[in-house]
Length: 244
Ligand code: HEM
Image (cartoon, rainbow, N blue to C red; front, side, top):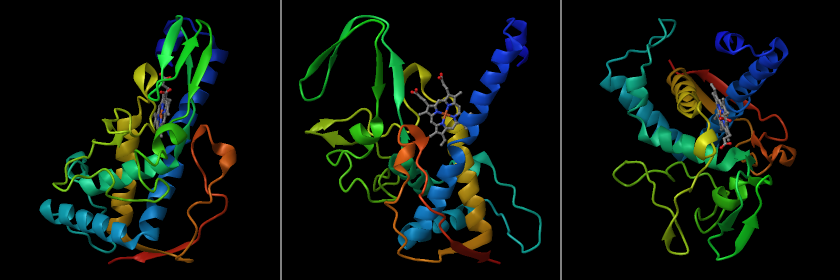
């Protein structure tokens, strides 16, 4: 705000800018935190693996969790040691992030598609890319694209999997929840850490279960396609209790 004022930007414009920042920083992370927890509840093998990783990290860092005791001091270093959770977060983003990426065309150009089609695009046009259907749910890149596979982004040696193929060729953009290029989300690392922190602490202190174990996961609100995180079409009820 200080910088905007120094630049002489009008107060009414600063207000709009702050509203945008409020939306971008809150609008997506909340729904994703919900979905991540939901997918873990829905897939017991994923829950067991992530919980196992949480407990391993707690032990490695000598953190003791006491009922009624002080909250554990979760550090960034601890979160960096969680490849399974990383993959579960990335898979949640793949399934639920449906933003429309809008770009202004700055010069005449020819846009070549993977299938050989070419499009001539004029300076001044606006283009939009919808990675949800072009990438995230392309069955060639992600087989059974609507299934949650918590280890989808994990190699057998637990390093991050980045090799995905389409028509035999390695795909550069295999997941684009945060967009791409110059206006790629600058909050992505922060958001990733928020999601990991949230799930880490939830799993340290609580046990969860869905009230309806075979709750359908395909029911998302299609009216939100293009905005970012999809929302469920109804409340999903779950039970939780202290682990300790
Ligand atoms: C899971 C959470 C989030 C998701 C999925 C997400 C996704 C996105 C997407 C798709 C874009 C547009 C990128 C493009 O046009 O290529 C964007 C832009 C942006 N995001 Fe995020 N975002 C998240 C969290 C955050 C957070 C926590 C912040 C700030 C603390 C933030 C700040 C921004 C800003 C400032 C822009 C505009 C960038 C620009 O136009 O140059 N985002 N985000």
